Image (cartoon, rainbow over all chains, first blue to last red; front, side, top):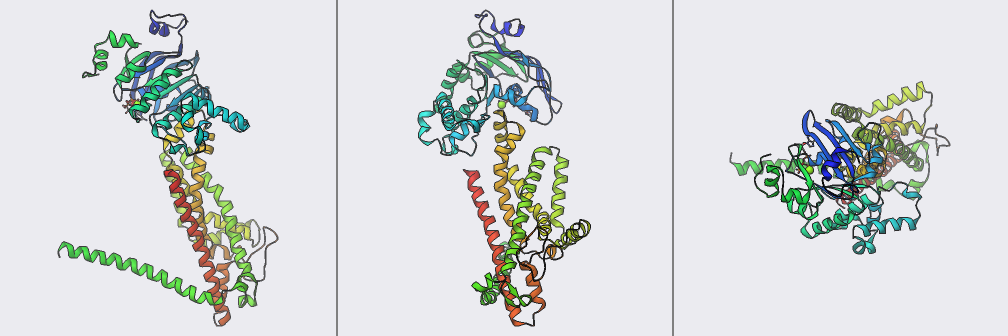
Amino acid sequence: MKNSAALRVVGQDTASEITAAVEINDFHVWFDEAPVLRGISLALQKHRINCIIGPSGSGKSTLIRSLNRMNDDVEGYSFKGSIHFDGEPILRKSVNVATLRTDIGMVFQKPCVFPKSIAENVLFGVQYVKKLSRQERLHLVEANLKAVSLWKEVSHRLHDRAGSLSIGQQQRLCIARTLAVKPKVILLDEPTSSLDPVSTRAIEDLMLELRQEYTIVFVTHNIQQAQRVADQLVFMCNGGVIEQGPKQKLFGNPENEQTRKYLNEEYCDC
Amino acid sequence: MNRSLLNKLFVFTTVTAAGICCAVLLFMMAVITAKGLRALDFEFLFTASRDFGAAGGIFYQIVGSLLLVVFAALICFPLALGTAIFKSEYLKNGHMQRLCAVLVYGLNGVPSVIFGVFGLIFFVNVLGTRISWFVGSIILAIMILPTVVLAAFHSINSIPQSYRESASALGLGKWQVIVKVLLPQGIAGSITGLFLGLARAVGETAPIMFIATAFSGVGIPGSFFEPVTALPTHILALTHQAINQQALQNAWGASLVLISLVTIFSTLGLWSRMKLKTMSLR
Ligand SMILES: Nc1ncnc2c1ncn2[C@@H]1O[C@H](COP(=O)(O)OP(=O)(O)OP(=O)(O)O)[C@@H](O)[C@H]1O
Ligand SMILES: [Mg+2]
């Protein structure tokens, strides 16, 4: 692992086994010429919960939406810099965006289930689903609903409308739907901000479990939540990264005064 | 004048206006029903007309009208869906979208007789199709296209952006998003527009009288390029012989059947819209 960004983040950790899944290098974004991200360099680590925090409007969503190129469709979007996923550059024009998005899945702030059955929602993104046998489909549905601990609650009503689930259940269904396309990285943009505390805990527990197999990039502006689930913490402000590192370091002994203030929920004028 | 008096005056005016509208409609329906019912029986509905309509029934006119609008629907539906999807998904530029809307509204404003004349010149004279029910269907399809396009466009446009984003974040390509997310909703919306369009098309005389219909003497067409008889043109022909009591009686009967068809299509349109509403509320 020669990449300097990765080494810088890893620090004195057990450097040999931890590698970066996503490397961002001097990445800038403009919306209609207005700068939104200003030279971000980051390494997001494999099989870790990489948590991005920062005040509203600091560019967290813009950053993670760049990782699966959701911003491509936004009018007025332009960028500079590079992002590599598993060593491959992903911002090139030649990259197949649809394939990239099956590798880097995304879960949004508000659960958005399709007006179909629960089972159909799980299979929604699975390509070639028509070629699978009934048995194989059922197996996929079961496995992915189990992975988000939703199987017990819904196994008897897989053909009910997904809209009949509670909002918390819907969000877990959205995660199951993302898992079903077998991504390596899962991006979650404030996935719990429309949920009640119990559902929020369920999602947090789920993330802790999922990191065994997936790389997780998680945006929140809830500092307690970051403390509960993060492995690595990135503090963003005004389109730039102020500080990044292991959670313990940022909470315990931050290098930057703004980081300390923000994490202690004091007034922070960044 | 004090405020409450003004208020009462306003209420009175609106109630009167609404009352006049309803009264005219009800009066017309009542007359047509009363007069039409006298002509209407099983035989009238299921036998061919004789004596230029003065005798016999209107079986082939009903068949002809239904044939015209069913094929108009089949032609119009995919065109309208395609236009609506093109407009909402590919014309990202605001100016182009507005231009497209203006064109569609413009088409809606064209008087129906112009469609008839256009069909006569373009299809019958230039392309040499001769008088043909299929050309009539094409012209009716073009005529109701705006209604259906607008309905489809509204329903596709009302799909929240989050559905598109969620689908494309799962790795669905643009085409797959269109087929799996937009089309189902667009189809539901177009069906409403289609029925409302058909309600209008089935009663139109001017667009089809030069190009698609004969006044008498034809049955069920054997090919795409033969004329049919249709209800509105039949009614027109019957009223030309108004001195004949039997012909007039039959005109009332045919009018009642035509009005019923319009009502059925409109009701289906409203019903499908209600269904659609409950669908989007889930
Ligand atoms: N589509 C867009 N067009 C123009 N400006 C945008 C667009 N999306 C975001 N921005 C701007 O980019 C900046 C960063 O927005 P972003 O949504 O990334 O912030 P955020 O950190 O996710 O905030 P929040 O915590 O409120 O979600 C904001 O100033 C916002 O106004
Ligand atoms: Mg955001």
